[in-house]
Structures are given as C-alpha cells and as structure tokens.
Image: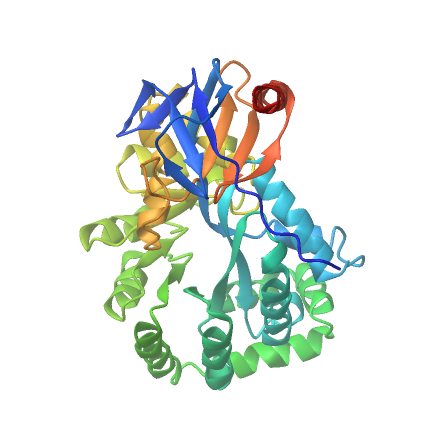
Amino acid sequence: MPTILPSYPALRFTGAEILRDGEMQSRSIAIADGRITRGPLTEVNLAGYMILPGIVDLHGDAFERHIAPRPTAPFPSSTGLRSTDRDAAANGVTTAYLAQSWSWEGGKRGPDYAMAMMQALDSYRPQALTDLRLQIRCETHTVDTADRLLAAIQKFGIDYVVFNNHLDEADHLASFNRDELYAWAKNAGRTVDEHLEVIKQAHRQRTQVPRYLCRLADRFDELGVIYGSHDDPDGETRETFSMIGAKICEFPTARSAAALARAVGDPVLMGAPNIVRGGSQSGNIAAEDLVRMGLCDALVSDYYYPALHLAAFHLADMGALTFPQAWAMISEAPARILRLPDRGRLDPGRRADLTIINSETRAIEATISGGRITHLAGEAAHRFAFASMGAQMAAE
C-alpha cells in the first residue's frame, strides 16, 4: 500500500474566544505546517466557539476497555489503540499517556503484557492521530525484573514511570474479600493458591526494594525519564519517593501526602473523574478539596477521557478557579510537569494543538493535534467545510 503522508492544513480561525496569556481573548489564531503561526490564510469563522490549548493527559487507562471491552472478550491491540486514539481525539486530547502496569500481579498488569503493549504502540504510532505514549506503573516489589524493565524503557523510549505498591491491597483481599481475590487471580490466569504464593514471593523482596528503586532512579536520570509515585497514603511515603527523585505525586490518597508534596515542590496529579463525580470512587480524598487548598497542580483522565474538559468547567462553575486557571490544569500544567515545552499554550511556534469547544453546549466539536484535524463534528464541521469550499472557489 502507498504511504499516506499526513496533511497539515493552513488556516486562520476568527471570531472565537481564545485562551492566551492566562485569559480569554477575542482574537484570531493561525496554524500551518503543524505549528501555530501568523499570516493571512484561509479563514474559518468560529464565532460562538472557544479555542483552547490541546489537552495533555498524563495518566489514562481507558485504553484497557478498548482492547478488552469485556474481560473475556479481548480484541487485537492495534484495534484497541485505534479506538483509544479516536476516543482521545473526540474529547480534545492531543497528547495522551496510557498507564500500563508492570507488576507481579500478572495478566494484563504483568511484564509480558507490558512488553506486548510497548511493541503494539510502537507499531501503531505512525498511524496515530493523537500523540500516544506509554506511562509505566512499576510495582515496587518487582526486583527480579530490573534488567528487563530498563532495557524495555530504553528500547521503546518510555519517558514517564510511576512507582506503586499494591501489596497492602492484596493482603486486605486475602484476609477480608476472597471473592475479589478470586477474580483478581482469575484475571491473572492463576488459581487463588497460586496468586497467594506470588503475593508471598513479592513480600520476600521487601529488603531489596529500596536498593532496587534507587537503581532504577539512577538509570532513569541518565535516560531522561521523569518518574514519580502513585497512591501515596501519607506524607512519609511521599517524602521517601521524593528523596530518590520520584518527584511526581500521582493520586495521593490523603491530604498529608499532597501537603508534603507541596512543601518540597513536587507536582500533584489527581483524577478528573473525581472532580466531576464529586469525590473518589474508591473513597479517598476529594480532588476538588485539594484544588481549593492549592494542593493539586494538574488533572488526568484516569479512566474516562470526557471527564477532563468537564472537570475544567466544573471547577470554574463552582468558583474554585477561573476558567483559564482550570483549563491550565489539563493543558499548560501537565505539559510543564512532563517537560513538553512545545505544547500546553497557544503561542506562535508551538505545536498546533487545539481543542475547539461550542461555547453554548460546551461540546468539543474539533480537535487539532500537531496541526492535523483529528476530530471534527457538529456545526464546526460545517464551518470548516464552508471555508474549504470558499478557498477552492477563490482559487478557481
């Protein structure tokens, strides 16, 4: 099959409210060759719309449902990634980190599956509309996988890792919820007894874990990998991770962990669904409370892409932040945290990453990622088509 080269339209959007320099402004914005630019170009009248920086999502596992809509009904990874790509684009996401576990838990969370996902994404990436990347969620008690993990990170260019520890959860299930433990073991392709033995083996690594994490941290620094921790239960845990260089505090489950992160300058990430639903689905601290206390820097999709833009509007509607401040939590702040200087703001020369929202309905009607139109629907689609026809008639 012939190679289809990506198309980068050269357009100027007029009439919209545009987020620039921390405020909504009535002005035009142009894109060409994949970048935000200046100059007279074919105009698209977007009066009645908001043009916002593309959403940068640092942690999402919605891809799991696209690959396996039901636990017993998996589809090829390529199909799932294509569906994830479209899902992200339809919800204004222009950069998306897919949160893939690397764990003793096995199954879809095990190293073998993680390696397969790295290969699948590497193969799919040339077709991708969204800038799809993998975040590795590394269980702390995976000491014997160090060489394999580091080799994979280097081979596939993984640039973001978070550490987490699910052993306490496993111990709780073993003692108080055998039915859920059975389901966990079944998903990993094990009997309950086999799964309990794996948990015991993980516990036996506890004396080696500190040295293991330090080894990984040293190598991550050499490779330029940004790393952090997930589900910190308290300030002491966050301080320990911070001291080894794992500076990102992702989904702290208690205020003390977020407060310690703030005290030492570590960015705090929380789930956007937590904001939209009014609290954590697992009973942990409410993300909106952390935002109001100034203890949250950025929001991520977690398990649901639509929650990202809905959370920004919710925070503004509730008076927790201004709308530009709220939108920055899903665009400028995450781009800064992951050291992505070419995105997150609508400045000339940056990547043309735009999320275009109907001001009345608040529906995302267009997404442009890296200068390519990745989603187009509703009235916005008619505006783009009309502009295209006008340009063709003028040329004739």
